[in-house]
Image 1 (cartoon, rainbow, N blue to C red):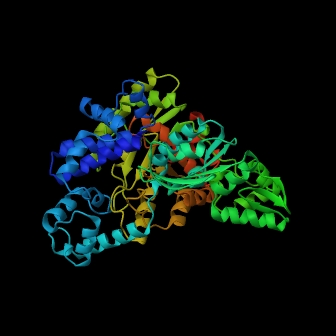
Image 2: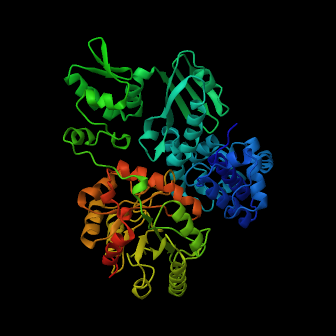
Image 3: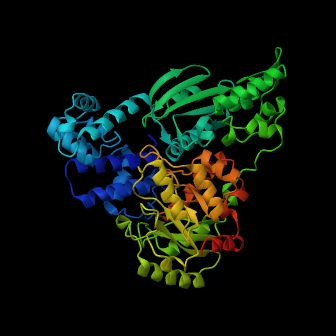
Length: 575
């Protein structure tokens, strides 16, 4: 069975949670959590390396023991340690760790005091008012648990885009090798680059007699076959991800690709345009009366209703059809347009590589500059920099730039925005930098007025360049802060600072709606990796996907500019 980096990360995360429930060594638990993050965000497929008999790359925080477990997981899909933990703890207790607000310590307390070892037992205990009686819980936490359980039951499981990409890429490549298959495309919300996807829709064109449907149902990762016919099949992978396959003739491929890419609202709007022209549009083609007049390509579908081809990321029925009709579609930014990265970390704080290693990796990724932006002192868990350590790093960067060629390191800081809107470092420490990235890392639940005022005050500081991961959301873990976005965007315009699209797969923040708001208000957006290792530059493609969903063009993105062009823009934000 193919094993993906996401599967390895899930095993390590589960081990960490179960060890914490058992009260194991905190350093050991942290090692597994760090390994899960490192592997989960890695751009290279580890199972492919292991299968080819190659050595694993040197990964931060992963020594011989964890590397051996990676090999074990790649070979068997699990490891002996996880199996032992499953024998020692109730099997269903792992599901409790997936309930928002229930960390391992609370799960252990619930298990020990109330014998809660399943989600259903948790629901019964909360419903009976027994949880509030436990020390450290109370009525509010009990109520939040009930809310989380209700939301979990109502909402279908969704996968982060970067995780879904691992399964999609492997399955797409595998299907392409099946005899008779001519074309394979992963459509749906995945093709539209949504932050999360509920399932994968795969479209295949194949010659008559191709065994693609049977091969799909027999794919090694399939757990359950929900349906299987001559042209349609649905399966659930062992990861829980549902995959639907449609087999269409080549002459219908474009129409089917348009239909299954969606969104539903976009498709309805296009069908109405067709109806106004006397045409019928469906997944099989464009028909006038009984004759098919188009459908082999997506371009032919759009041309049949008088439109140019519309990029998948825009197909949400948010004005793209009117823009296409008027010839006003944006020329969306591409990964190749990026010239630099303005947010990343090194070993000086919570990163895993030296400045030099990050610079060389950025150069390999095709960038011309990068900004080192360590955390500031308030973030003690990340060993944030105080003014003295920041000055030492400035000197280090100056020396390194003298030795490097083809890449330039800019001097920056990711400074904490305090609850009152002040910055974590004084102006005297910030004035010697090329840029200042400001970020909220605490007090996410402040009321709207106070949270908005906090950010506005920070942006009004003398030294402030980019508002990092502006909403503070973590996909599936933490909701966005409640703020007045129009006020923030317009304040950024007035101040001359920028907003960030953070490309970390857990964030993808700003969202597409606020990206477009920034564009319409004339505020530049920086697409940055927030890299913590040399492998994280690969995540920039997800940030670009988010920017494209927000209608951003290269001119709307700060770091599509050359070093010569960007320096004066940065300087304007620095006093």
